[in-house]
Image (cartoon, rainbow, N blue to C red; front, top):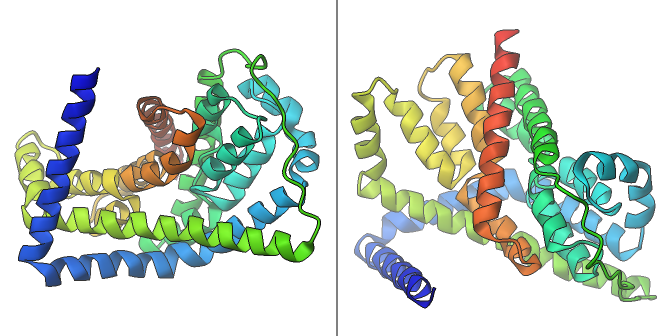
Amino acid sequence: MKTIILSKKRLLIAIVITLMVAVLLSPSDYIMAVFGGLLIYVKNVLPALFPFIFFTKLLTMLGTSDAMSKGLARPCGALFATPPISAYVISMSIICGYPIGAKLAQEFYMRGELTTKDCEKLTATGNSVGPIFAIGTIGTLLMGNKLFGYIILASHLLGSMICGIIIRGKRSTTDLTILKPTSISDNADILNTTMCDSIISVLGVGGYIAMMSLVISFFEQIQLFNVIAEALSYTGINAVLTKSILVGLLEMTYGITSLTTGFLPTMIIVPTATFLVTFGGLCIHLQSMNFLSKCGVRYSRFLAIKLLQALIASSIACLFCLML
């Protein structure tokens, strides 16, 4: 085990040094790459994400999470074998999008209302793309068709629910120790705490997007995507599709943007976009694991669940496309 950990550490060091050397050799290219990532973040992510991070944190601080989860507590328990508070996490995740669900899961884990197993299950049901991003950004802006956004969102949510049922297992109650949340009586303190926590969280998201833009730019510079796409093209797989998927596995927005420039048929574009949105890409994974790792969730488990969820969602999207 120590040898494996040491090997991973050495690999990470080698990657970091390689990226640093690449930036030093061609600083202007990578500055533009980071700037492009931050531009996407400021235009598409920050306006939709920050208000929801703030409001969900404020609702949690005000103690409304228990009351809001009561109506859906029984269905969530029956379908997903999760505690009542999971209904609040799932609802807020569906409304607000990545990575709100993971952040809330960590908060309730720290309060003793969720176990590690519960947080793993919420990887499927409580780790969703937001409707504003799916319909507005992906469907309308990137794909030029609002209907595609609705199909992607519906397929994504259905895939999440089905995946949640598949991995439900038994309900864990033995190690739940519900703690009282810290009492803050002053409204000014509540607002200040909420604002500071929200700013830190949303800045973290922007940092991940900027760094992933740099990594994608590096792979573009060394022609990695083109080499793999060219190699697979001999098997009949479209080069644009291959490159879009490879980029999307790192950052889904870039991948879907690339996908829409290849003049591919709807039957390919929509299910592939659904897969990328549901899988989330490494950028979303890092954002989510920033919270879930503190709950004891292993990345290997997270990855397996997101892959299953993405395959189910893309299959559902295929069915929707057949009805168009």
